[in-house]
Amino acid sequence: MGIGESIGSWPLLRQLREGDVLGLGRTSRSGRSEALRPRTERARKVARSVCPYCAVGCGQRVYVEGGEITQIEGDPDSPISRGRLCPKGAASRQLVQSPTREYKVKYRRPYSDRWEELDLDTAMDMIADRVIKTRNETWEEEDEEGRRLRRTLGFAHLGGATLDNEENYLIKKLFTALGAIQIENQARI
Image (cartoon, rainbow, N blue to C red):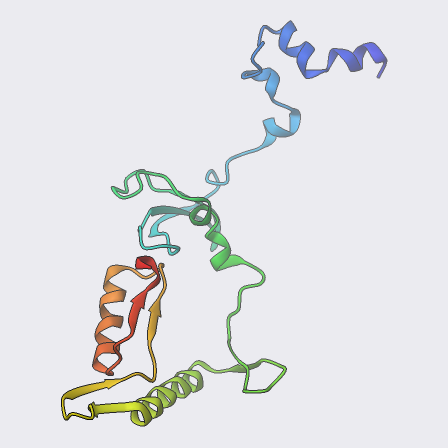
């Protein structure tokens, strides 16, 4: 390619020659960009979902091809978000398909320098045992003046902003039934 041919292919000269001075038409495209196709084009299925990142509950359209998510976009039919997603919501595909996603319960024993894998039943039993033990050890039936307390200060709960109203309701009921009085939510703080 000679120098004249090289200069003639410059985007600015192409824009002027073809009358596309703002570079919004065909002159703004390259061979590579012409070959690009939307990730939603190949999707065989579109599932509707709700973004898991915060309590807003933005609607999502999840495009799936061959069991793999190809794209996540805002759902224009959602009365909450009307088709919009924040950057975290738009990137939530990584929650499902990230190569660094953990699929097993990890536990590090006190004073250990390594993590070990546990099955879910063992981990859930360990948590339940610790909650019951702490509740029994820290239970306050009444104060020193004989007033009824029926509470524990041995554990608390701080909910995350990704929980919806129904989940927060159930967590509040659970921890109240266990006698906890320090129950808070990150979304309110």
